[in-house]
Image 1 (cartoon, helix red, strand yellow):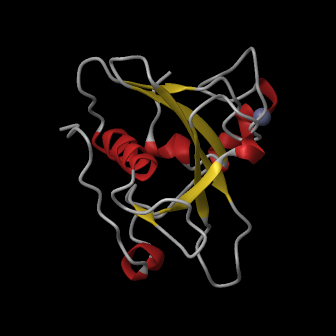
Image 2 (image 1 turned 120 degrees about the vertical axis):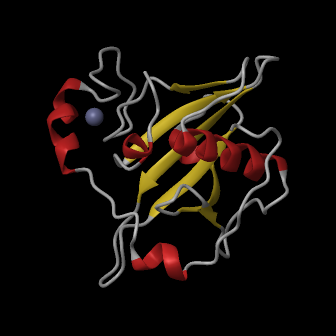
Length: 159
Ligand SMILES: [Zn+2]
């Protein structure tokens, strides 16, 4: 199943990023609790193995253009490996290109509720599938314009 920007806004999207050596990282994009007057926050966390979701390490906030805004509690900064991997993967998802040998794949969890599922429809468990039509995001939101961008040059360009 292809991971798309829309899927990353589903609420609990988890995907894997693998390089040609077979090294795999797990990335989660979780919809946080919205604050009044603010757009919906999407928190990015990462793990170097298939850990329980609560053990993922916090990277930052995913902006509507697929870039990352780090915050005070981010565990990684621009230039650090985990940050770079996540930023690179998001960029590849946004431009819809991936170099040979690399893979970005669905991680076997429902994109809405985050539970492991054996059956899925477009990355959602059957029960959650019908709610995907509520997924939306606004690429021109004020959030994207005002948050501090951290553009990522990444370990291999995906264009
Ligand atoms: Zn679900």
